[in-house]
Amino acid sequence: MYKTCIYCNRDLGDNEVVEKFPVGRRLAFDGERGRLWVVCERCRRWNLSPLDERWEAIEDCEREFRRTRLRYSTDNIGLARLREGLELVRIGRPLRPEFAAWRYGKEFLKRRVRNILKSTAAGVGYTLTSFFGLAFFFLSDENSKVIARARDEEGRRLRIVRKDLKELQIEPSANPDGWSLTVPNRPSERIWLFGRRGRGERQLVRLEGGTAVRAAGHVLPWLNPFGATRWDVKDAVKLIEELGDPACVFAAAPRLTGVSRLTRMDSRTRLALEMAAHEESERRAIEGELAVLEAAWREAEEIAAIADTLLIPKDVDVWLAEFRKSP
Image 1 (cartoon, helix red, strand yellow):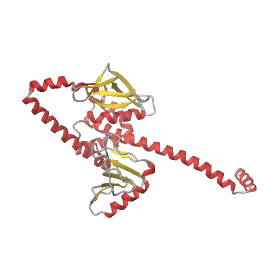
Image 2 (cartoon, rainbow, N blue to C red; image 1 turned 60 degrees about the vertical axis):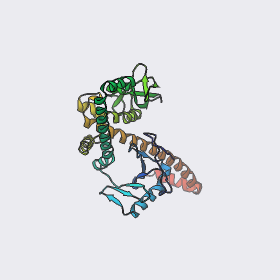
Image 3 (cartoon, rainbow, N blue to C red; image 1 turned 120 degrees about the vertical axis):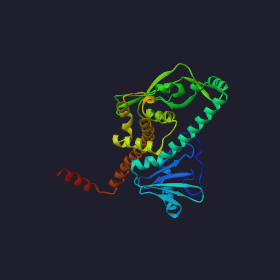
Image 4 (tube, one colour; image 1 turned 45 degrees about the horizontal axis):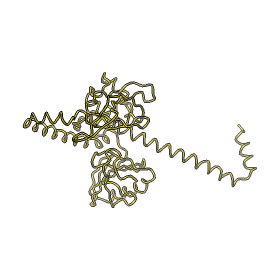
């Protein structure tokens, strides 16, 4: 059982309500599909729980949700706040527009307010101490700050710095997904004043498949620094709905916008890409669970077949074989 967010590595907290799953201060669950997430209070990302730890926890969440009176519900999503401080998100059969707007809208709005306040404070500070502020900017080397890290297909770490964001681009590919992501990498990094800075000659690395999706999920928040309003989120969700699937957004984005560089795409497309990256990463994780389940089922089926034949006389096996051959 994990204790920290897989996206920002912050502590997820704990609860004393769900005995079978004491991790997290906000739990989201879908009893019909057997899903259980821990929502990080820091970055608002959804961490999918391990398969073997969720079933009894989902039953506990459903029971506690029905028991509390302090809850808010729509036709598809309900939110309950328990006295102990735990928040439960109950998911029925959500449509993507409502689900995505509920899931991402608050985080985008929070990001928007936070960065507007930061920009205002920076502007006031620069006005008051223009010379010293400009000197600090160059001395701190903010453009070389490592803002995101990812992994390539071989597991090597990639370091993406602020000034290299313009090199990020989506390109057509012959792989099943139909696209690839070009990521600028700095081969090393070192501590410099207030953080780590990328060093070395810039290298362009081409990523495909799951590694490309994960890298996009790390980088896209930096391309959408001011978040989005509720209407912006609806527009981005509408784009995903028009394309039919989150995975199609990456392949279609260069064609729809006429550019391959992410920094030149319009804000709606970048927001849709960020949503698609999160949903696609989760879909791939679920597919991995299904593959494990199928392997376990096949093994169990082989054992069951052997066990059944031990109790059946041989003449019955012969009769069944002849019966199957008959038209």
